[in-house]
Image 1 (spheres, rainbow, N blue to C red):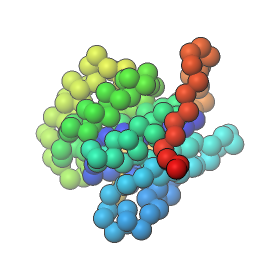
Image 2 (cartoon, one colour; image 1 turned 90 degrees about the vertical axis):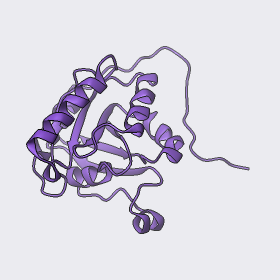
Image 3 (cartoon, rainbow, N blue to C red; image 1 turned 135 degrees about the horizontal axis):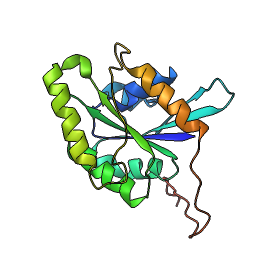
Length: 186
C-alpha cells in the first residue's frame, strides 16, 4: 500500500514518516539547509507479513503545491498531518480539497506535536479536525494524537496502517489513463 502525506508546512509530515519508517525522506541539500520539504520524498518499511508499506512525503509550502499534486496522484491511502499547536491551516485545507478532487477516501489523521500543547488545546484541535473533515471524502477518518519526537502515539498509528494495508481498496478499472509527470523535458 502506498501512503501519501498531506498537510500544511511545518506540521511534521517528514518527522512522522521518519518515526514510522526510520527513513528521513528529505534527501536534498536544500531541504536539509532550509528545514523544509521541497521535493517528493520516499520511504519504505516492511510489514510482518512480508508486504511493504511505501510512503510518499509531500511538501506543504503553498508554492510547492504542484509537487504535492504529483505525489498524491498515485497513493492508496492518505495520512493527513495536522499540528496540535496550529490546527488546520491554509495548506491543510488546500491539500484536503485536492485529495477530494482526486477521489481519495481512505485515510487517517495524525494530530502531531501533542507534546507541545495542553490537553485543552489538543481537544480543541481534535474538534477543529472533525469540523474540517465534515462533508469531505475523509469524514469519519480516525485521528491519532502523537508526537514524532517522543514516539508517543506512533505505535497505534503504525498498527492501524498495517491493518489498512491488509485490506486494500479495489481500484477502479474504468476511466481514462492518467500519468502524473513531475518533470519537464525540452
